[in-house]
Length: 264
Image (cartoon, rainbow, N blue to C red; front, top):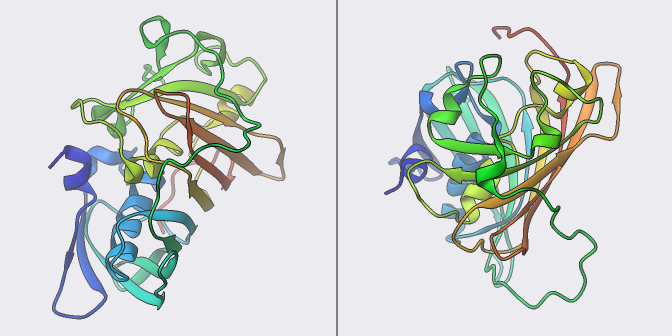
């Protein structure tokens, strides 16, 4: 298995709907597991409990940030259908719920596109882009993920006042992207509000991801943008295109802006 598959694996226990998982430190942001990484773990359990392979839509609420180490996933089938099944899954740690997700799952094919209003952005090729890892933004996740940013949207060290990021994404071990990895790709970037000089921890409160296709091998092209920062809250809208230019994931999240890390 790839590093991502290993790190997001869930193991069924003797109790129906209960799974064990190990939250790996190499997929964290300053010691706390990345939100998109955690979403992939939840999606695996939620799909397994209804005997499907592919999430179609995942909506998660983040109540507290779990620590790296062992965790319990509690999953429940809500409805099994021929085209769409619905289930929920939650990460528990130290007898406390951390994240809960509602998941729609079922067959996902790359059907013909009838309409598209969001073509991929035009940015320089990966070899002409800039690593998102800097002295001011070095996180554990980048041991496994490579993000190369369009020079015009690099937020550090010189923010440009426009909270938009455009970048290439891939796994460092050479693993090609799959549907589950899209859950990470929509949330692997630095906060868009770095461009507004809002630094610090930006914890996700709610994240919804729509999976629109199976990605082709190669780099993923990603864009994330914010429309409103107000009262310490901001949203991010993210889109992911595969190497053929197909739109394969859409996401939207609500997050808190520029907080110092805290313990629950």
